[in-house]
Image (cartoon, rainbow, N blue to C red; front, side):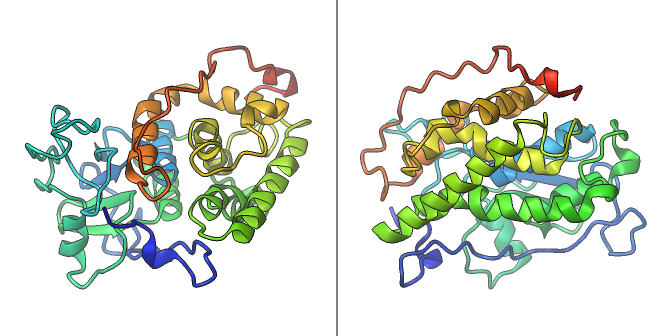
Length: 327
């Protein structure tokens, strides 16, 4: 199997994530050429990917399930990229892991998500990533940036959303939210990857220290605040959640982010459980899918492809965060 992130390694051994290739915009008034209408767009995600999971959560919370379709790719990615496989095609790593092959993409009959990229830009030669927001009418990718997709779901599709009272980007905290989101992305969301995909010891140690310094800061912030911005939950909370929920089962072990577990943080662990128990969120989290992707895909890190059976997580227990205010 070819290394998945070879093009994103610097000469000094640092992981440098590629830029998102498609950044067109859906507008509520149709001024961009992509109007916000029901059943025109389709979201492709992996339940393993924290970036994609954030768009899945936004779609769920805003009540856009009947407006925007959804397809989940197979968790095991090889040198051909994200694939659409029959649930019975053996993606759990058995002898028939990739054969017989059966497409389960209901929109375009794709076998691989790369086909959507090729249709949109025949010259594209980067790494195929999720999420992807697909335009069924024009048969092209509108956008593959999770930040943009969450913003469009929140703003452009608001008139079509069932839960119009939900606002993931409140205007009154816009500047502070953007600053904190950027900090969380650089040091935590992408920070675990900078530690996990490096090829140099000193780069790994620097990335890990930056990661845990950031976690320590947020642990202190959450000591007196139920969520990152008081008692309301915004998009920044969900971007942090998507890394925290994967931390102990993947990043602590697989990416060697092993100074502490989230379980070792009183406030971060309670905060994680609080968000996990929020209406509809648990059904967006599939630990089997998550673990099979990471441990079976990154053979350079885990050549045996053995998937750990643990850890046991009690996410149904009392979190104790309600004392800090209603959510």
